[in-house]
Length: 399
Image (tube, rainbow, N blue to C red; front, side, top):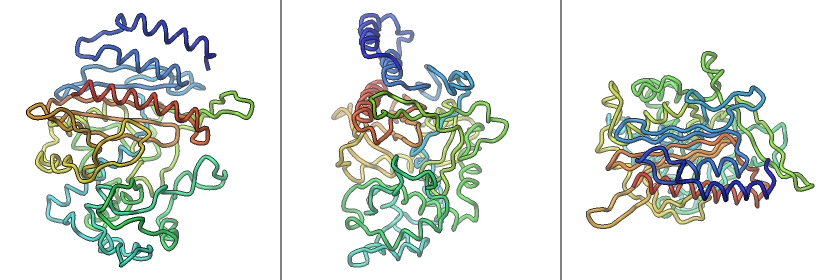
């Protein structure tokens, strides 16, 4: 990693000459320079972004390496991990079943996942948790989600890998508040939603999404968990930066493949940026050819109505509201008012975001294959500030 003086010299040069780096009139001045500056200053091994405008990729940019040991640069085929952005696909799958008359968003979750009756809750609050609550992160489930952190033992799983593990934890959990009364981000909620999908369709979660979302959208290089053999060469490695006891920074390669286990419905998606662009094109009202019928515009707009304020100190640019699985960023007023839509994702060494404007079809999608260890609070906090700044700039771009 560069020393501090070299980093400062780089930022000074970047500031003085950033106007010369702008290659597209549609791009907000400084975004590519800001992106590259964050990547280099934060020690990120590889990253990429695309901009989408009215259903077409208008700008793409790659920087750094997908795999250092293999000397493999990031390119348009590089497959990144999208972590919690997976939740948006799970939510669309639930809405598909709602629109086909298979369920109601006001159905209680224990109708489909009876094991949840084991959770402690005042006045049997668990019986009042609905699918709508799960989609909007208002069910009341505890946070943090898993006991595993950077201090975890080597023998502990990356994530819970079996449903039985989750069920075994239930008697030792409780609802933190009455369902529907406030926001609290929950990963398990989307595992429970996947059980609803499986119970009503007979398909495993991944199979249902492949058949009813990925294939119709032409997301042919997208998949869950282990990479198919014919795509393995494009899979990005991922890295964690650790601060050692003597103050130096150590870069650790985590390995290309990892199993999100039972948590796949909230974080298991892998895809290149071009495939994610097809996903965002669909969301923005410019669906790829042949994808008609995935979900109506009316139902999408229902998902983008504010359900609950997001009242917490987010590590990224804070959204103001939560919709049905989408973060919402209201902008402007009167005739100019618009609600921007997006989601972020952090898992293993990956960090990602997308933001879009449903009114004009503009979007920015980005992914980084390196992050700081949560145990290194100072470095981790500074990294999140850089990520947050870039996300804020992306929000301005699409507005």
